[in-house]
Amino acid sequence: MVRLRLDLAYDGTDFSGWAKQPQRRTVQGEIEAALGKILRLPEPPALTVAGRTDAGVHARGQVAHVDLEAEAFDALESRHGRRTPGAGPSASVAAPAASAAGSSAPGAASTASDPAVSAAGSSTATAPAVGAPAVSRTGTGLPAGTGLPDDIDERLSSLRRRLAGVLPPDVRIYRVTVAPEGFDARFSAMARRYAYRISDAPGGVDPLRRREVAWYGRPLDADRLNAAAAALLGEHDFAAFCKKREGATTIRELQRLDWVREGDILVATVVADAFCHSMVRALVGSLLPVGEGRLPVDWPGQVLTRAVRDSGVHVAPAHGLCLEEVRYPEPEEFARRAGETRRVRTLNI
Image (cartoon, rainbow, N blue to C red; front, side, top):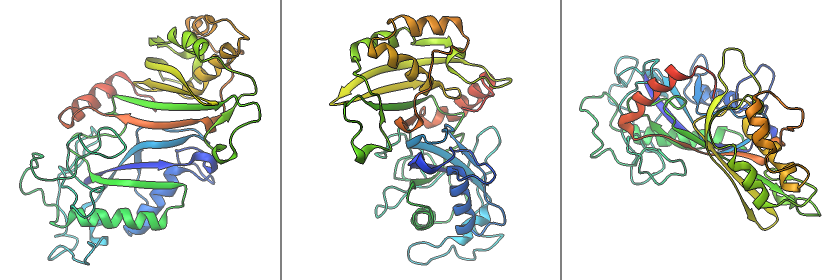
């Protein structure tokens, strides 16, 4: 088995969220179907994602991984049409298996002609996502004899180009890499960063940004929003801001929540180790009436301490929310972090 890391973005407007659902259009469903078609697989491969976004929520820095049989690479040709000599079911790619605990095949890297496609493990790449692999096999500590074909970089480049031709225009995979050993898109993550964008312009949102910016019909005060947000920081039980799931904890560490005004748009930056269902939009929804001056600054903090859903907390519209970044540790810490997260938390994040 070979584990691939996918760095991707999507406009969530016309999707019923990330997770695959029967008779629904989802991001996961589109990508899995595209991979199955391109790689000529009898069944679409299963993706594991860093953060399951809800219907209508966007992503600019989403990360996923997929485990593929070595023979799947036989369906890919390099840019020059080369195949691995003697390629076939027994001779194409032989790489260490990616285990359920998150270990994966050591990678190779991209060619200079396509620096966005690589298979190395350094976290110093120039791609949009923090923690994404670097672009050179040299010096990355890859062991000899991994069994990956010499033209693996060009094959991954071919995969990315073909995905761009098959996927709909509201989904883009901008990086495909062989994941470093121990990498797990979900459990290796250290934090997720979201942005929520809302406009208080009297005339409504700029129509060219209507898919990514929500509208609030009353003026908002950034200072009041930030004062109320400060009381929510730290590790707490966020049950008041989450849709409860059986057997799932609602304890989270909220590392950052602050607001900045950019003209008639206010942008909230929200960072946590993980988020439970609807948490970011509920947090934003609790702050907006404070920013308007309708509720006192200490009200969201009071709701937090009660740890039960409050009818006064209205979940903010989905289309204002975007997953901007998934943060990972250094590659040598991937497996340790994944094991640590699995022990602490078993819910979907």
